[in-house]
Length: 241
Image (tube, rainbow, N blue to C red; front, side, top):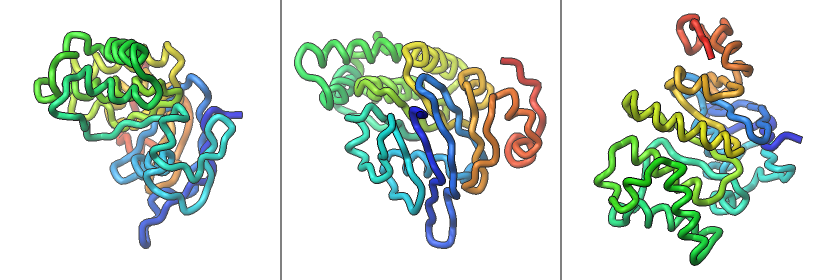
């Protein structure tokens, strides 16, 4: 049984079929990239998986449990967490306080403080824990989102465009954080347009186009897939992992 199993998931907005019978599986400990043109249905798919949108049809199975009708507030307790494209934090609280709030869904007392410190360290924000969000760079804010996610002790983490708007050096730093999460056994599904950083991280890639799954395979096979090149990449890559 797959760790996460998505079966024929569909969602319609009026006359537009935003997600059209999408199916894929994610194994425990795997990193899966989710790519495609703008408007392909990637973020809508994340919203369906985590209960922010209701499904028109299809099923979602997580750890052998049917979570098709799950509510957003229930996902955290199950070990299933997602980030958003736009960062959001409590402006008047320090990094430490922002992260500690996230731990309270599962821990209290000294264990909460321990988990907060651990999450900040994993996100590489040790030097920023006493700063407020307004004092952070965009890259640090993205890592704060990751730290808050880690504070919930996720087994499955969905990252929605983590590299968006970052400089090259910030992307490199966040890439290393993601590699560290993978090394700790956290399963990851990542929506991303910065493919040169995503592809070395991913074990497998799923491509969406107009709400449908266009292709699925290893990064090496995806960048050579003629359908993907025509719909999204625009040219053949000289990809070397």
